Image (tube, rainbow over the protein chains, first blue to last red):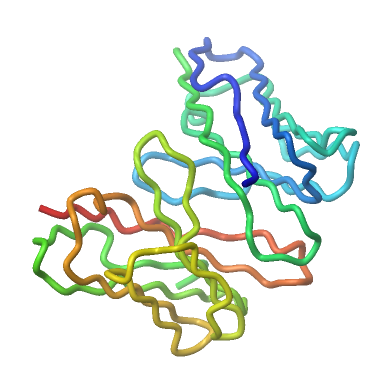
Length: 112
Length: 114
């Protein structure tokens, strides 16, 4: 079945640094979502992407829908301590289906 | 209350117990989902309900039984669970096909099966 890979699995960065993480698949997706999950909480939607090549920002976060439709990346600029958490990508193959496939997540730690 | 709420937040149960997890969404959505999140594994979709009808059941064992009495409420009834069923159970809702169908998650129920 469809599977998403996320890299890196985990990362430690200094406060103020920029962060880049990505999500790849061997399958083509028509929608990409990026979520953040804090400990003990459910995932919170950060950014949604619907078109190949689309670049969307949400504050310090920027995400892009890859041209091949098989990947997406998320950048965080000027990281702060509250950026700590697990970042998940999710992809949907058909336009109107309700099923998303989730990646295993990238765990981000921010050192003061 | 806003968004998606789940109760209880934490549950410890024995293998012979029967319990239920509850999810309520206040977003006016008409699709609801149950996911299982185990440590170091991707979220696993368990059940999807659209307009109160089950549309997906990803080969989930029968010891998990969902119920969707209306578009705002979703239950997961648990019976004779196994220790490997211990996980975070997440509920989500969405509004297909319009609005992009982004899923909004509740905070989850942390389940421990002894």
